Image 1: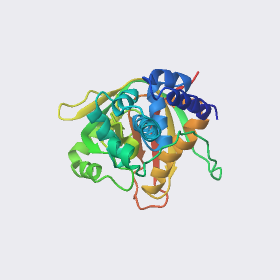
Image 2: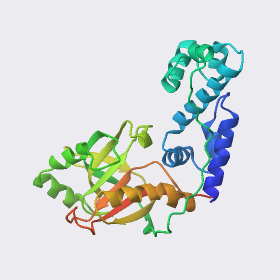
Image 3: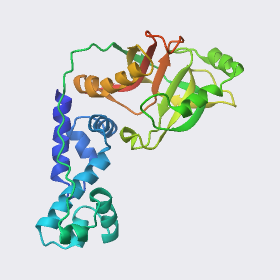
Length: 291
């Protein structure tokens, strides 16, 4: 697919500049998408952040030069972006388990992270149900908490948020709801960089989508007018939902003409028993059609 071809062009640029300053805007330009989408797609496809990939590749090349050249350690450190021997030594030992001096003098086993390429893997041609919606500006009104990033199972911090909602607050929120997706929703935004490594935190909202004014005792998030890709997930909770999230980034984005833009990722659940085999959810992601 064109997106994966373009992503690989960006990786080639990064590889060619590991010993220089890497301009991520240029990498995104080569990928024919925004820097925001490039970083997100890289993380979801690679399973690590772009900055961590660059760090591992640089330290891989640094290890090779330590063991196959007579270049001074300080010169190798500077070549691969480290301002001091101490910072280089800490990073090197964190990855390889030994110091640069030990790597040079004792010939230990070192780690190597080869260059990455992206390929689309077709797995059975399972359909994805989605639609594209245009929405004017609105706000999400409800409760907010900074919670740890967690992929598998139910996030206990988010479960605890639900327990704080009393009937009076739920009624207030439902009365405010006046735009799609109607009723109670969840929204996640402001992710830490290490999202795909399940590191860091995100801002999580439980509330409603509305154009009404936010009451003083509740939190709100302003959402600009956007195009949204809406994906349907029907099946056991939370496994089907998590599978759908993975397929959006691994299959839909690489084969579509859309890229993700900054904004909240919204989850709507049909209000039925989560143990039901037909539990229904919708995932709303803000997107932009690529030119």
